[in-house]
Image (cartoon, rainbow, N blue to C red; front, side, top):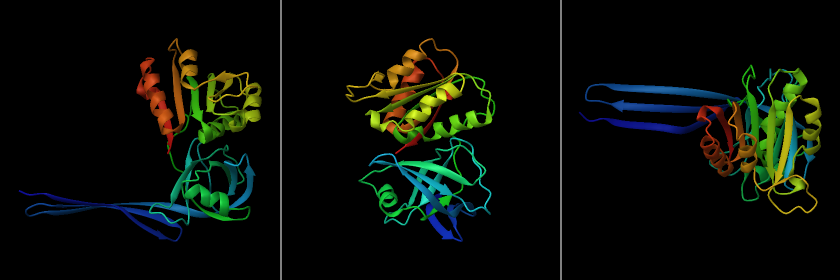
Length: 277
């Protein structure tokens, strides 16, 4: 009795600011045909860029406003997708929200340009204050639990700091009870440390918060940690005390961090991650 299976996974229909992906599975048996259709609709909104802050030649912060008539809320750590008018099979780009929830329908994205790509060069060279972007509804499950009852360790590189800034500012703004929080932030040079002064100041504002920037390149004036992020958390958590690890950054760093943290004796369930590719 033969079985033939067909699956279409990339049919996209954009209509009325909505993104629809249709998954179709067709199974033929000798006497029976079953058609299963799963339709996932993703809403997109036309949102205005109200401010752009250039951190460097390679990084910009985009402050974006969702129309007032659209309810907008998110959990710190979640992301949005931008549907960009670029010549690519896939026109969507995902970015973690870098700001805490607010009541003014605005949010921040911090974006590093990839000169070899299509999405970030379009943003850097074509989007100005007043421009509009197609922004998806909020997505993702990379966020803190409602009750923070264990120690947290945030490990990030580059713009991977975005979801952790959102989490930390939300904890501060809402005075959320928590255990100790450590952020280990890897970069190459001092000039690459995003939100440096803000993170330093949060150490005095959030009880039990410790910010540890780590630089991998030669910075003669640098007095802090040198090298990569991995030896730092291995040293700080060598006693294997209860902790939850949150990782965000480039895939290579995340894969190595997961392997090392598991080798320290922590379970995979104690490690959550968001990959930037």
